[in-house]
Amino acid sequence: MKRVTKYLPTLLLLLAWTGMGLAADPPKTDNKMGIITGGEKGTYYQFGLDLQKLMRLKKTRMVFPLYNEEIHVLGRRGLADFEDLNGKRVAIGRDGSGTFLTARVLLQLSDVKPSAMVPIDTDEALAELKAGRIDAMFYVAGYPVKLFKEGVTEADQLALVPITSKSILELYPVAEIPPNTYSWQPGKVTTVAAKAVLISFDYRFKDCDAVGRFAQIMARRMDWLVQNGHPKWKQVDLNYQLRGWEQYSCVKKYLGLATTTTQAPPPADDNPVMRAIRAILDQQQ
Image 1 (spheres, rainbow, N blue to C red):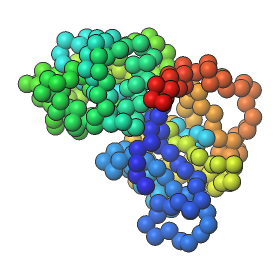
Image 2 (spheres, helix red, strand yellow):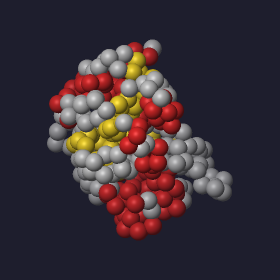
Image 3 (spheres, rainbow, N blue to C red):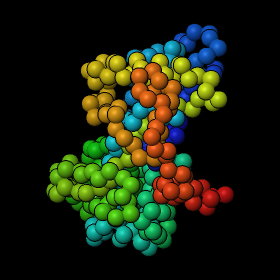
Image 4 (cartoon, rainbow, N blue to C red):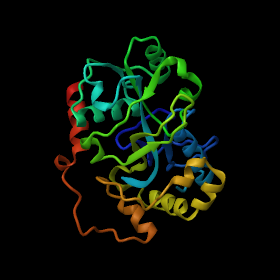
């Protein structure tokens, strides 16, 4: 099962569902664990394979924060900042993808209103942008993005659009795309990053111990993942404090951490990101 299931922050889902396995030849047991990741070409899928090799997914809420993915907004030259997307035709990613929802949330938070939000995949979006039928496109991915390295040249007259909106910077970590990351990009570009998160769907706490042991093995063997897995494992900080997320109590238990907090998490209505997501979902009903 390899479909994209990404939200804000971007999510890599570890699912503790009875009867669902990802291993090539899973044994016939009643309690298997599986992973839903992004597409086969992306970092999510590679992270899932790395975890499969480490855990073999049998003994195996937020489990761990993972890595950052920079938010690329590529547009026609002359778009000086994110607010310049007002009144423009903007590709926001395939419907249901992580890029799609992240783009919708950023536009909602900044109160930027394009004349059209075009729900197409990134390859098609770049072709439309180069043909002049749209003005900009979103792509949520760690730099350097292969599509932009190989599919864009100086002759296309395109540029990365900085994201410096105060309403966005209050909720997203600031990131920079270094100069010359792409041959047509001479200067650094300020943007923000989405955090990939490993979460567990443990319905009715039936798999608490399995998820806890998974997290315990993962934490103890980060050295193996760094040495043998995707290069992005080097950027993972399992102790990163992710605003708006509470680590699963079963994970805390197996890591030897306190399972109670001195401060309750803020209500959903106090989280601007969740309000933005809820508003988007309401618009689709």
